[in-house]
Length: 129
Image (cartoon, rainbow, N blue to C red; front, side):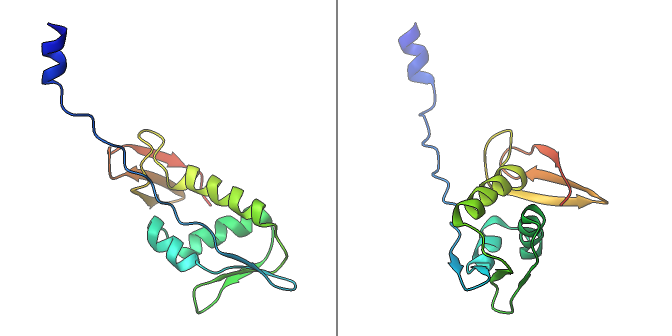
C-alpha cells in the first residue's frame, strides 16, 4: 500500500536557485561607490532611493545617488560591512519570511510598510525606513 501511495505522489520539484545580485563596490580616496545600484533596484523591484536611505541610515553617513545610477557614500566603508548590510536588507525588506521567495512587493500604507509575497500571498509588516 505504501508503494502505491508513493507512486501517486507528484514528482518532487527542484527549488529554483535564487540569483541575487552582488554589490560592485569601489573605494575612492574619501568615498565609497556602489556601482550597480540601478541593477540591484531593478532586480529586487525596489526604489533605488529606498535602498540608499537604508544604507545611509544604517551607516550614519551622508551620500547621494548620481545621475548614472550609482550610490556614493561620503566616507570609506569596508566592503564586508556593506555586504552584511545588504544581506540584512534582503532578509528584512525583500525575502518572504513564510516561503523564502524574493518575488515580493513592498507596499506603503501611511508609515507602515507591508511585504507582500507574490509566490505564497503572505503579508508581513516590516519596519519603516
